[in-house]
Amino acid sequence: MIAQIPMPTATTHPIEISVVAPVYNEELCIEEFMRRTDAALRATGLSHEIVIVSDGSTDATDRLLREGAARYPALRAILLARNIGQCGALYAGIQHARGRVIVVTDGDLQHKPEDIIVLYTKLQEGFTLVSGNRAGRKESLLTKRIPSRIANWLLRQVTGCEIRDMGGFKALDGDMARSLRLRPGHHRLLPALVHMRGGSTAELWIECQERFAGKSHYGLSRSFDVIFDVLMLGFQASFKARPLYLFGRIGVMLLLVDCIVMPWLLWEKFAHGVDMGTRPPFLVAIMFFLSALFVLAIGFVLELLTDANNAIGASKPYVVRERIDGQG
Image 1: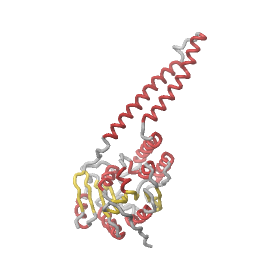
Image 2: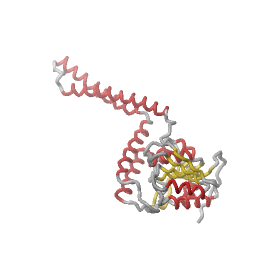
Image 3: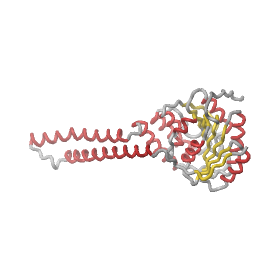
Image 4: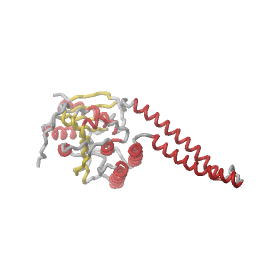
């Protein structure tokens, strides 16, 4: 059954749907990806573009993209000067995308291009982001699916976002997507980031297929990176990206312990003549006092660094070597 496509509301965006796909050394998949994605988008009847970002590919991917630009007028290829990672390539693609709606996908065809319209239709119900929950994943249980479930559970607990599959196939509001300042690793956290910004999220089941060709560029080691990403996002969610809130509280707690221990030691000293200089509680109190000063100093320094980072936040983490627009 063909999905009913709601008519888009009036918008200043020249493009209705932008499909953004970061790729790295996908010469075996890129031809089929361009063909199927172009066909799926033309079938919608909506204005569209395909933004493929080659993340410093060293195989024939760039050449195939140049050739594809002559056959697919909607194609816009962004060739980066060097390999900066999936998140940096995705960020570059989103910033170059002009669509009112941006669909994020992979270039290995594990996500069916024919499902783009399914995500788009769900988004029109008023959501900021719609996530495709991958059903029937064929990847390794030990190295991919179990770590993914653990990471998704942690993200739900830390951020309060109820999306069960944070990575992969997504459709989101274009303006929200372009406003996100993605840091390395954030491509796995898009629903949580949108949720933390106040956006509404939803998910639906989509079919996850095996890779069309080639092999995955990720292994078990990525799971450790995800854990650190979750911890950092939890820090930001809990303390509003203000380091002083966290380190300030730790420093105050240490000082409170000092305020309890030191008066007691002084009372023992002057009321009962008990020497305090060699007692373990005195040494602990001194250690806590110095630690409190150190932690508070770290909080102030990180606060200043955060301000400086925000001031220079307009700088982009990627360099475009070449941009290729489709001809037609």
